[in-house]
Image 1 (cartoon, one colour):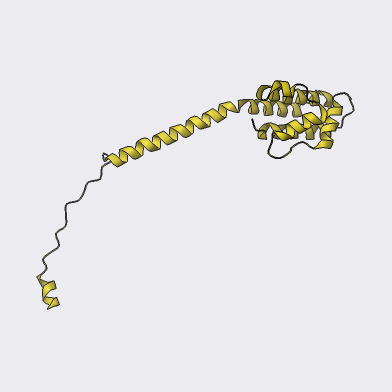
Image 2 (cartoon, rainbow, N blue to C red; image 1 turned 90 degrees about the vertical axis):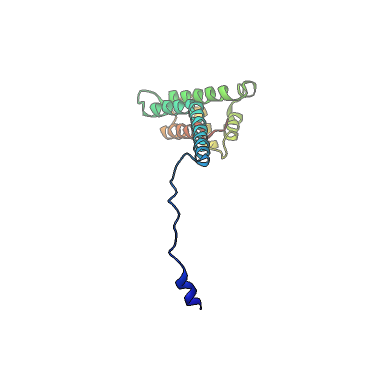
Length: 156
């Protein structure tokens, strides 16, 4: 009986092929939504890029300073201190910042990063190097590299 029913089935009628088109409303919404997201991300990236221009410039100055053989160790330390002060004065409270020296200055710099980047001993030697000419070059190089890391990682 079932075999007879199967034999009575006629050929399968297939529907016409549905044409694919991007004119459907869903595709248009998807296109505009993804375009808007890409545009927002691009604007955000450009904003961050221009906002951090001072970081790139300061790091380039420190790299040039490290490679400059004509500068003395004292001049390198002095320039690095001035650069750090200049960056801080442009981004943080001037009244709080202008009078900081020594350990207060070190604590301020370390408080503006997620993890402290300056070592107490090396920082003190670099501070002393502002007033002495016999500062070791390894202290200067370490101080400049720590300053470079601070410039990269400080939070405004």
